[in-house]
Image (cartoon, rainbow, N blue to C red):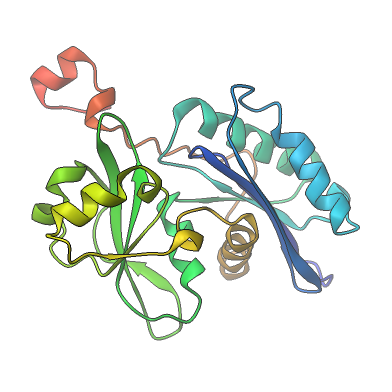
Length: 240
């Protein structure tokens, strides 16, 4: 582990709301967010370069890269992970994969409560997972990551706590209706990923295990939704 102050880059292309950001021990936070376009990954590298330049940094200053590794859009995930791995292998720095849903609870800062993160899947379904904050401030999953129809969330997650995540851009009214109008819905700032927060989360994971994140060993966790299954898989009740 280097004695130089750490500087991590965060990349999230998992949903239509993309972000890159920087977090460093001796740098101010820097973040860019944008809505995905049909260009797929062609805008990602320019956004990374813009973020680095705005902080007076270059890729050579990076200690590591954190990247959202799923679930999310298949093609978009591959773009983000490929760019992260390219940087990691080229610079010989670690690449820390993060679950798409675990990126959102840290946006709540010091609010210590149960929260449920919802990320859009397909055909009216959402990926969902509940988290609680533990004694040392880390957000710990309380349920397995699952994929369910929006209108059945209340039968699967009875006590969601504060509901956050990008699925609220699509389904806020449906979620309120599902919970009889009593759901606590997170504000706008908790619905969009933050590349700087992602970078900090990656740094924290790397700090606990500095040798555990080789750049050439990043697995994408697709967690297929039911809407993405083949006909045979639906008949057999299996998923890939």
